[in-house]
Image (tube, rainbow, N blue to C red; front, side, top):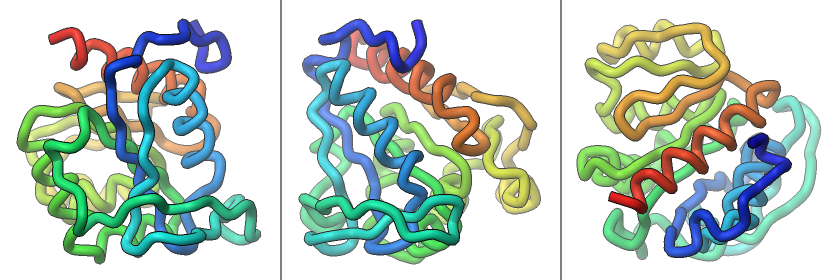
Length: 191
C-alpha cells in the first residue's frame, strides 16, 4: 500500500509530534508525512521552538507555504507522544539541532524505545541527540560523515528501518518513507 492509498484508522490511537523550524524546513518533507499520518487517524501536533507561523522552503532555496506551530518543545515531553517525525531542509534541520529542548525531546523518545521517522537533513538532530551510535540509517548524502563520526552506519537506501528508527534520503523517497513510518508507528501502537 503506498502513502497515497491509506488504510484509514490504522493509527487512530497514536499521537505524533512533527518538528517544524520557524524557517527553513523542507515543505514536502513536513506536509506529506503530516497528511499521511492524519489520514491514517493519528493525532499530529506541530511542535517547534515557539508557537505561531513557520515558513517552509522548496529545495532549500525558495520560500513555500507557512504552517502553524501549535506547541513548543519546552512545554511537551516524550511521554506526550507515541512517535516523532523530523523533516529535513538544510536550514530548518540545522536550526532544530541547535534547540536543546528539541534535541532532548528526541533523545528521550529514542532512548525510551519509541518510534521516530527522520528524513533528509533531519538526522543532524539524531546526531546531536547522541542516539546514532550502533545504528544503521540513511540521510541526505552530505550527512554520511556526520552519521559515521557519531558511530552510526550510513547506507544509501530509499528507506532504512532500525529498531523503531525510520530514515530516508530526500523528497524522492517520501512514498517509501511515509509507508514505513505508518507501518512502524502502527506496529509500536500494537505492542
